[in-house]
Structures are given as structure tokens and as C-alpha cells.
Amino acid sequence: MVYTRRSSALFIIGIIMLVIWFLADGGMMATYIEHLGGSKYKYLNELTTIPLYFGVVAAVIGLWQLLGKHSEGHWDYYSSTIAGGMFILLIAMLVRWFIAPEIAVISTSMGKVGDTGKYIHKLLGLNYVVLGIVAGIIIVNVFKVPDWARNGVRLSRLGLKTGVILLGTLYSAAELTNLGGLSIIMIGFFVLGSVGMVLWMGARRNIPNSMAGVLSAGLGVCGVSATVAVAPVVQAKSVEIAYTIGTILLWGVGCMFVFPIIGNLLGMSYVQFGAWAGTGILNSAQVAGAALAYQPDGIETLKVAEIFNITRVLVLPIIVLWLAIWYVKREENVTEKVNVGQIIFAKFPVFVLGFILLFALSTTGIFAPPNHYKGKYFGNTTEQGFKESKLLKTEQISLLSTEASKVQREDRKAALARLIENKKVMSIDDDTILRGLINAKVLSKKANKVLKGSHKAVRHTAKKIKAFRQWITWLFAFGLVGLGMQITIGSMKQAGGQPAIIGGVVGFTKAILSLIVVLLLVSETV
Amino acid sequence: MSEEEKEFDRGSALSIFGSDRLEDFMALLIALVLAFAVYIVY
Image: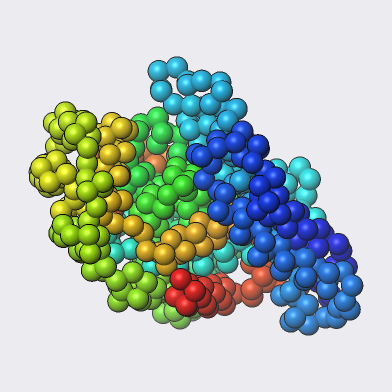
């Protein structure tokens, strides 16, 4: 089978990207950029670089695909995915740079919604992440993915996994310790709880043990991967796997859109929302989608959500073992012997180990030396990076003093008092604590802006870390638009009958209970 | 999903790779290449 299509599509995609770059770089988009927000428009730097690089690649390979000779083989198979990959990327670009900002302009012009104090696009989370996924869903269900792009659309999960691995570079050891402890407790409780609940409900509703087993792993652990991993252990039939995946997709897609709206209505902090999404949403890809939808221009929520998600994936071997023992006990006439150890080894997701590897590399300081900014905190000479103009102004000090009473936690109170007294952040620890205060959204927007300014005065993001953030953002954007293209009505229609009822009850219970726990207990910093 | 599976003689409906393990290793390889590029360029 020859996969490469003699189509001009990839070449045209390359030309479109180059035209975008040419117009932006030549200043011919100035009026339009002004309409989209002017100085508040965040993507000008991206517009003048990214479409150039990818446009050249797409145009050159597109020309070769159009004019060259193609024969069956590895090269044909893998190179034919480039057209689909670039198709996803172009949609992500258009949505991120033009469609989402345009919707924000329209929504802002309509005014704020009632008592919420928020514009409709903020309330509904109509940002590039949500709109990208919706664009993917519309393309696949209304227009169908074009033939030349079909092979490449299957690259989206690879993009998400690469993004998760690279995310390892952005955590500090302290963050991972704080969040890791919290996530182990929450995930331990909710994973074991939902697996147990599915097995209990399955027995009461008389569904086959194989169905209950595979459904419990899918709903409890990490969605589709867990379903596939557990299937041989409980000897699940294809139709049971399809039911489970359909239920997970239906529930996961719903959560991906609903969770950010609830988070916005409740004014949840990034840490709270990340913890909730990482616990309450069933499938890994939808966890990333909801986290980025909640905070599209920052990475804090995604970082928290992914720690929870990765902890959940790490529980998979325990669940496989539990279900293997449970299944053998329930089914007296199991004839086929299953090697559980071999299944755990074969199905354990290596990308989680990649995340840990990149985190370990990052802690060595090769991407951003840990003591790089020390002088700016403690020093008061220009050689150490101190600038008089960077100190907090009198009106900013009085604003923070007025709002200080809102802060409850002692460490935050103390760090804020030191900031007010010295007019600048005095230590790395204070900086971390104050960033947590910003993320907790305890103070007003104005006061948080002052805190952000004081953070920037002593610390700028290292160039390497900035580059990683940009790559991670694009890998997730790519993966999520592609994910949208894999959400077909047909695949969700597979959900049905008892699995859908059990999935609905367990998914809903998990979402509500984890929301309550998060709201009551989580106020950790990131 | 089953229709899509028939469409490709390699990989699955969700991936171009034959197994999740291979996809994981490819993601790790790409991430390491990107990390190295970021380390060199910036």
C-alpha cells in the first residue's frame, strides 16, 4: 500500500503559512492586529517566526510529494504523515492567532455576563484550546478529514506524549514534592475508590466480570491506555473494550468542556483546578485539554494536572494486579493462564519514565541554574541586578497593605509583610510563596498584578525555559486539535447499555467528590 | 473506529505506530532531540 498522495495540499499549506509570515513580518497585518487587541495581542513574536520555519518545510516536502515518485515502504509510510501533521498545525495556528482573539473581541464588545463580572468567552472558556478541539470535531464529523491528511492525524497522541515528557523540564524538586504528596493521597483514594465502585456496581447489575474489570480500569486509572492494558488480564472481548472506550470518550469529552466553565464560575485557583481535572477527568488527553482550556496562556494548571495524571498512570500496575486476582477468584473456570508480570512490563507507559528523566536532567540546572537569580533577591548593587526603578511604588505598597488582611496562611502573610517592608522580594523562598499567593487568587486582580511585577523585578524566565514552554504549548495545541479530529460521533455511540450507566454514575460521583475535596483541602502553591 | 482500523495496514486508529511502547519511545526520542536543540540554541 502506497500512503503518499500525489496532492498539492501540503504545498498549499506551506504557502499559506509563508503568506501569514510574510504579512506579519512586513507589518501588513498591523491594522488587523490592532483590531485584535493591539499591544495586548500576545502572538506577534510567534507570527513572525513559526509560520516561516514550518512553511518552508511544508512547501518543500509538499512539492516533493506532488512531483516525486512514491513507492511502498517505511519512508513512504512515515513521510506521508507530514501532510496530516501540517494540516493539524495550520488549524492550531489559525485558531490560536486569529479565531480565538476574534471571538474574544466580539465577546468583549458584548459586555460582561450578569453578576459574574466575566466576559462570555472567559466564562465558557472559548480560547484557542477549546476552539481547536471543536474545530477538529467539526472537521471530522461534518467535512471529514481529507484523504491526504488521514494518516498524519494519527500523530496527535505522539504530540501529547512528547509534550508530557518535555513538561518534566519545568518542575522544581520542591514543586514535585509538594504536588507529588498531595496527588498520591488524592489519586490513591479516587482511583481505588472508583475501581471498587465499578466492581461493586457491576456485580449488582449482573454485567460480565470481564466487562466490569475492563470498565473499572478505564474509569479508575487513565482511560483508554488502562483499558487496553487490563483487557488481556480480565479476558475482555472486543465489544467490551469498545463499550468502555466509548463510555470514557463520551464522559471525558463532556468533562473537558464542562470542567473549565465550573472552574471559572467557582473562581478556582490554578492549583485547585489542576488537581480537580487530574483527578476527576477519566482520560489523559482530556485532562490536558481541560487544564489548558482553563489557563490557555500559562502552564501552571497543566503542570498540576499532569502530576496528578502521571501519578494515576503510575498506579496502573497495582490495578492490573488487583484485577487479575479479582478476576481469577470470580471466574472459577479460567482456563487461559495470564502472565500478569509480563502484561505490566509490556503495558507500562514508558513516556512517564521519560518525564522523570527530563525532570532529573532539569534538576541538574543545565536549563536554568538554580542560583542564577540569587543576587537580585539579596543584593542592592547594580552589578547584582538591582534597579531603583524596580522597587514597589508607594501606591502599590498601600494597595498590598490594604489587602494583606485577606491572606490567611502564615507563610504567605510573612512573605507579603517582608515584600511590603523592603519594597522587593527578598528571597527565592518568598518568591515561591508569593507566586503561590498569586495562583491562589486570594487578592484582587490589581494586587496580583503588583505581585507579578515584584516577581518579574527579581526573576525573569530563563531563555531555555521559555523555549521549552513554547514547544510544550505547541505540542499540546497540536495534540489537542488532532484529538478533536479523532472524536467521531461513531466512536462515542459505542457507549451504551450498562457500561454507560455505570460510567455515568461513577464518573459523576468522582467529579463531584473530587471537586469537594479540592475546594476544602487544596491550597498548595505551584 | 473499526472502519478506520481497516483503512491503515499499520498502526491503530489512534497511532501510526504498531504498539504503545514504540510510540512512547518515539515520543521520548523526539523530546530528547528537542531538549538537546533548546540546550544548544538558547
